[in-house]
Image 1 (cartoon, rainbow, N blue to C red):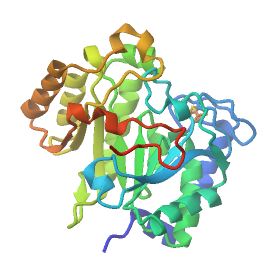
Image 2 (image 1 turned 30 degrees about the vertical axis):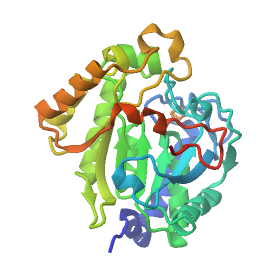
Image 3 (image 1 turned 120 degrees about the vertical axis):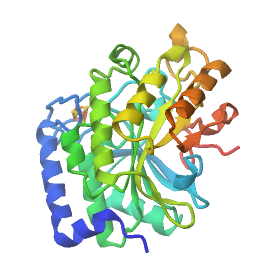
Length: 327
Ligand code: SF4
């Protein structure tokens, strides 16, 4: 019988202490590597434009995630607005940057009720937090309230990996499944296309800490993820994502047994059409090179997204009830 890691922290009183510690960070915010040091209890003037309350764009049973997350009943996905990066090709730009989806400010009790709705009404396999980094205090407070009312699903932390290790340490024993991107192996591209200063160092440190906490992926007898690390890598055109370097780093510094999800769905969204190197989909040749690299390194756990699967993943956040149109 699965028991989420946060349940023992709830019973011992540690989860409530984490809520207090994390809420204290909002007064001079250093929750992510940007260290804006703004008082989010009074304003939303930091880089992520997020204040005291979480902003949620939508939530649903999502069937387009990796098979171990979606399963037959869907991944209970909560899309947060705002972001601590600015990817010029972001497929979620409507909620991450344009903030135009008609989102709601909700307090932590309301966020807890969303989690319980995904568990009880939609019967989802997990709580999948999309772009959670800037809302870690609000999320942990909501997990605390929801646990008291019966939340028992694994928590999935679905992040761009621009996370600070000190904040991640406060999530130790709360998050069951870490789902970070590894976006770049060049800080030059990370700054140019995502405004992510020191992204390579920050993301690699974050992934090391995530792996320390949860280790390799564990799935249950019906093929549903319960705990562990899954690293996503989106292939960008013209080598911008530095696939070879990132995959080599994973194999050598995490493990050849780490679970990787290679994504071929890149589509020039948002501002990407005005950047010549980002204005097309990846080629078959670029795709085959990454597949060969995965095989050469002996990374045997995970998924390779087919190139013709690309449309499936494109969300439309104007369609509030279910941003992903299943084809
Ligand atoms: S969470 Fe937001 S306000 Fe806080 S440091 Fe990061 S970008 Fe700045």
